[in-house]
Length: 490
Ligand SMILES: [Zn+2]
Image 1 (tube, rainbow, N blue to C red):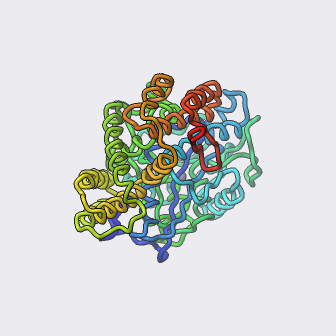
Image 2: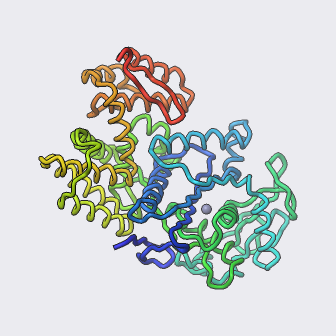
Image 3: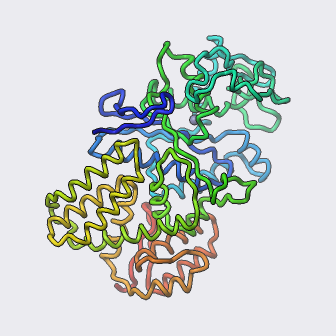
């Protein structure tokens, strides 16, 4: 069996094969940094990180080009800049910086290409000009709009037709478009707004055209996988298809497979600022173990809506501790040649079989726990080495393996007094959750809290954490790849 993926456009689970042998070109809609990112963003990007890891894993062996854009000009970031009395660039730098730090904390790999919309204005203007020249778009007194009526396949992705979509659609008072479904490609600047030159007058691009123009420029059409959250299917991705495919030869698709991740609810409610259940991701990561968040998200199918509760998180934390302990217990066989063990081979087949089945990460995590249970029973070194090799490989696809290896590496250098856990909890328990971890986990949690505090420019808190660790003889070193620690005099 090989990888099959659910394609939103065809509403079917299809065998996945790259359009160009051995290469996968993938575009995932990135962040609009106009406010703090939240856990819902983390869920979506974590899933695409795992999909990307699996595509590149030797089992598939694809060279993946992963593009994730940055919508660095948008009505919301302009509004935030005006509200906060700073430039749009400052708004983007602040929120995008925090988001990137959070992604690193969660072990999400960097995109291969990370195009900022404002750095691709020429490509965007060219694409709009082509749409106008071919009769798919028109200019008005406030900008340029895409004429949805000119694109008969509109609604194909979201499986809705234009008549259904028209119900309740209105033209806002400040918009000069001809038809309620038409959408802005170019918005003429109002006084004081950031603007770039264009044939229709100085202004800025609409959100949808940015993705069409940048994916065209960086990947070309058709590319293999277009991803995003479920809430982007309509109108964002529907509009991307209309813009891109209007300019392509008939029957050519913009993307071969459309993959959408389910949304995250918070204690049964949609997460939103107005409900007051919107906790910035940087704060969540200060409070909760990022690896446990990863495990929790992967325990739900990526397409399903998911409900985040503190109880479910507690369960994932305990599960992660079981994985950590089993992995630590296998440390003596690290570096040994892995023998072949039929029980481990069977687990491996089931693990990758689950991922092949439309990225059933919940099933795959279930197999990890079976491997944890088996590891406790293996009494031969060859079998234990096989189990360890499998766990490292499988957990690395899930984005957990490297972190466990890092924890093990620091533990190997410096054995630490186990009572440090209780003392750190007493010193820092009000700012960082230290629960069932061993000494290394507790130190890692404290370091995570310090780094989050530094990102949030709360230097008093960052110093407090550093001092609490120093009191235990733990010396921190900040480097390019993060913070490492050693035991003073050890
Ligand atoms: Zn997009």
